[in-house]
Structure formats: structure tokens, C-alpha cells
Image (cartoon, rainbow, N blue to C red; front, side):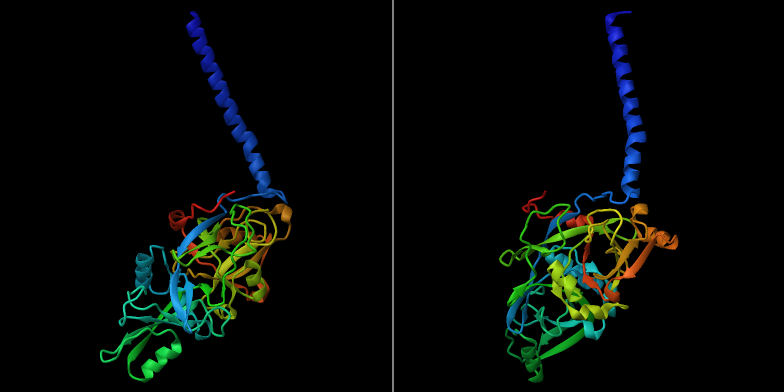
Length: 370
């Protein structure tokens, strides 16, 4: 046999041995290690890209004569969702369940359909809100009122609900109150804003506390926020921001607006979101695995308002990775976990969900990652 043939056979043998060793290592060494991470208490299971920076378009309104900057994330009317998505270039979720918002939990926004030209989404003056964070009656969930100037009136810019009502009393305009509810969380307002995070470096272990905002640019009309990764009900990855909450303690901890009216959403508009209070260490808000929401942004039962419940493993050493609603139900039926409404069933958080396509499209490329 020639030397060249011997060398060729030797190379083939070495290649085959390498492949067998690789398969053996993958099958018999790697898999037990993964299982150990899931089954052993104190193990760590971290999602990649658990937190990213996302740019969201800012919009502007008046509140009692002063400018307020806000974002549009969800609305109860499908046509309005499509209109806002086209106008802002950012996906606004259709959330029909928001129509169930009780009167005690919603504010009012006044949108002009004619009059003076301006920078409002309909090319007229910017809208007027009834309140800002900290005011009595503030809610991010606003009922849309359409304002139309009468033909014989002298249209002008109005900057408060009082001015609008006065003009109505004089017969200068009409107000059409719709049944459309929109999620317009305030970002910056007269005398305040959402807390801005001091550490602008975002990574998988970025803490939930200390603010949800990285930057507010009212010239470019963009807010950069921390987008957290979790799971939808079917195990698909979703991302969400946090803008307001109740009670006050968790709102302050997260650096978002405290909105007492959010509590009124329990039983009508708020949907279940499950967070873990023990078990596998991970990138969730309590230091364990990431949470699971009961709806995806495209589901008919989706709401940006989430009623938080805590999942606790009875024996943390038996903790497993749970990825969907069925996993939770099966573990609960088996008696391995308890599910408890957080803070006496009054912990509601405004967490608009975004799909991965939206996140990739609007991910901020200038914020440092680690």
C-alpha cells in the first residue's frame, strides 16, 4: 500500500474517532449537566438577551397648560391600533379587553379632528389629557374624546380640559365621547418624569430596581427603556417594559409611576402574570426564572395591565424550568408549587408586551451591552 493511501486512511480514522467522541460527549456529558441545572436547587438558568434597550417614539400632549410626553402602546380599537402603528412607526397592540376598563380607572384624552394645524397625530393640535402622574384622577388608560370645532367658531389652541369645556359651553365646539380606551403611559411631565437609570449599561443581570428608563430625548422625541424578556402562555419569548404599578412600594422600587387606579382593574382588565419567588436562579425580577404571562400581544385576552401572582416551589430542590401556562397548571395539580396573588391580589403592573420583531426593529444600538 502506498504512503498516500495509508495517510488517507489514517486521516479518515482520526476524523471518525473525533466525530464519535463529539457525539458521545454531547449525548452523555452535556445532557446530564443541563438536567442538573434544572433539577438542583440553587442552579442557574439564564436567558440570553434577558434585558435590552428599546427606543419608543414619544408623543406630546397638554395637561393643565403644560406639556406632557407619553408613549402609545395598546388600544381597544383595531382601526386605531393600525392608525397609530402607521403614524408612529412603532407597533401598537390591539387589546380589546381594555374596553372593560371601569370608569374609576380611566382618564380622559381629547383629540382634535379639525381646527388649527399642529403636530397631533391627525395633523391638528396636540391632544389634551385630564391629569399627569401624581394628580388625582391620573391613569395611563384614557378614554378617547373627539373634539370638533364648529364652522362659525374661531379655532385656537386649547391646553386644558377646562378650556375645552368652556369652549363647548359657548357653542364653539362639540365633544364626541367614544368607547375607545388607549394605553398612553406618561414618561415626562411638568415637574417630573419616570426615574432614569443611573447605570446605562444593560445586560442579562440588570436589576429591575432603580428605574426603567435609560434616556428621554424630547428633541428627537424618543424614550429609551429597558425591555425585559419573559415567556408568553405558549412558551414563546416576549419582551415587556414597565411604566406604572400599584401598590406604591413596588412602584417606587421599579422607579415607575404609582397609580392607585390600577387596582380597580382587577377582575376586568388585568390579566395574570406569574413570577417566581424561589426555585431556579435566573433573570426574573425576583432573581429566579423569568415570568410567564397568560396572553401574547396578538391574543384576544391580551392586556398590558397584569395582575401579578407569585409561584413558589414547595421543595426548591425539585424546581424545574416552567415555560408556559400548561407547565404551571401541571405542577400545581401535582402539588409541587403554590400560586399566590401578590400583595393580597392588588399588585397590578402596566407592562406592555412586544413581540421579537418589534424589539429587533427598535433595539437601541448606542446603549452599552455587557
